[in-house]
Length: 132
Image (cartoon, rainbow, N blue to C red; front, side):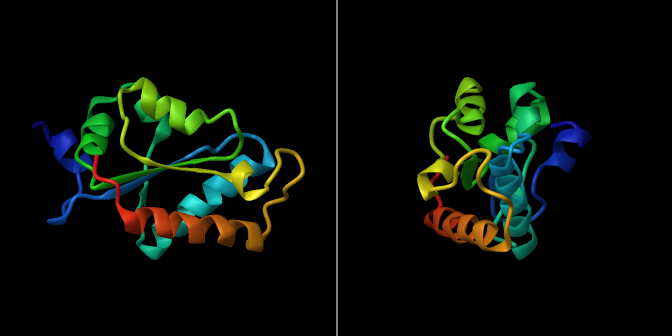
């Protein structure tokens, strides 16, 4: 393992729980992104680089394969986060779609209430801890 790969891995004894959020230009992308950041700040998991998965960045893919759980948060039914993970052959992960919570693209400003609703669902998904 290279030094870069070692630095990309969790240094704790337990495998990390990783969060991949849609961070698209729409309001629901903003909510997804902010919820992932809040989950990370709380210690529920660690927001990780979805672009690195799509770009097949070796260290990011390797760390994700070693994860204890993966949560994909998508803002809309396009499911960009889910599809990016699946395109890199990740099949076992929790998936949270904001449109399933009644949030519509272009009609859901990023309020504290909406962000907290996603954070609460994200906490439950990460606690369930789907094994990768």
